[in-house]
Length: 366
Image (cartoon, rainbow, N blue to C red; front, side, top):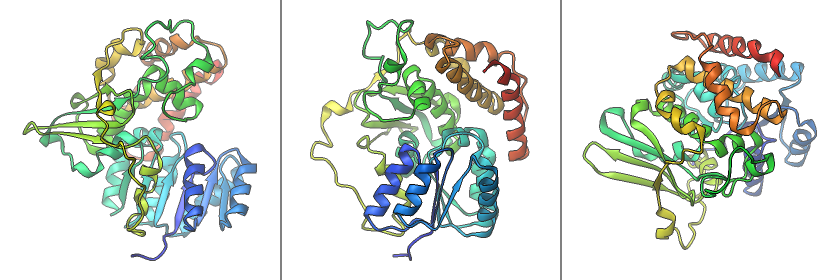
């Protein structure tokens, strides 16, 4: 067993961060440093309660600058990105210049989509290891997939609050309905994305980037029990079905295995219940994303980033009651056509500048 690792958690005050931090403390695993964004009270409470040496509130310019210096000066064994938003690729860039043979565990899909192949290639070339924490991408981790060896990969969606309620008129749902996910406890943004299936499009982009799989080979099924997370159809027609309980600790503790080989979570007694293995094709035309799936699977990297940013803008406008829930997709697709795209990005700064240019255009609207 290796010596106790130096662990950095970016986004410790969110739901995932809090869950993972509580688990580590119960197991008496030391945490080297944590960050939060605006929740200063909770960040300070975590630091004091768990005797963590360093904490940084990234919405504070001075502390954010100190965090950058911290990344430049310290070697980290495991870095967790449990935050939200594209800008963490800047922290990843600093980290990758300093560290090798470390584990980079990412639950931040915006960061992966924004970073694209540039991020994945830098992780590989610096001899670091990526562990994706989203359940769908995590479920494929042990499969050693290569684009040339597979026919199709399906990730799964639970259906959110509306898919199995066929009588619901999506023009009449309220925010409470939208945020009432039947299987997962998530933040507001992820809950909205889950309810209208935007999250599946983003996760398709994410999977394509992480595993270098063509978008034409990726699709999704509906799995009501949120137990099957991916299905891989290989060229030899062997089909792999990857399942595990909808418990995010399963993915969160994976980076710790090299250091704590006896670490595991118990299997539930009914883990092979056939009822949990039901799948169905997404075919509900009530959801406006349905008619755009083919279009969205043909977007370039910069177009994918634009789709993601426009979705964030549409969410804000919805939460401010400036657009209706069922107009989120319309807003994205209309404005996607108006966006100027880049052919390629040579650096993370190029990506950030592109993202800022899109946000700047719509700042006055929000």
